[in-house]
Length: 119
Image 1 (cartoon, rainbow, N blue to C red):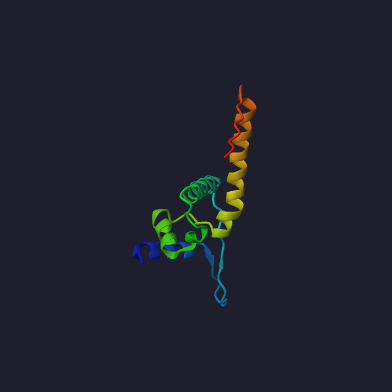
Image 2: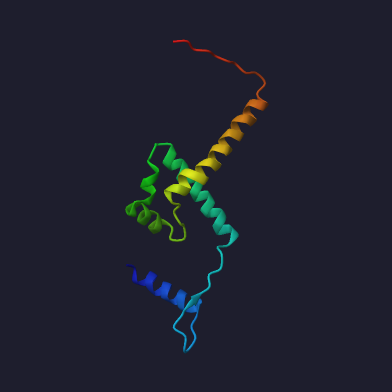
């Protein structure tokens, strides 16, 4: 493990914890991520979903420890979604976005052609 990262993590925990003299409990108070960080995570989630569905990669691959380590090494602040989140809420959101785009294109099309192929 990276010694610098470990040292920074311990410093962070110490600076954000409330330790009392005769108390064996430690309470750590974390602030929610800033709006900019949440927006960046949402963007990463969208990119990840597209990267997973276009080449037809199984959703459970996202929970592989090597894949998680790869993403953690690239961006330590990004929390990789679970396969359930990826195949559920994120996929549903992307499907709705694609459906709205198609609907808008069809509404704004001046001419449409319908083709019937009989085999």
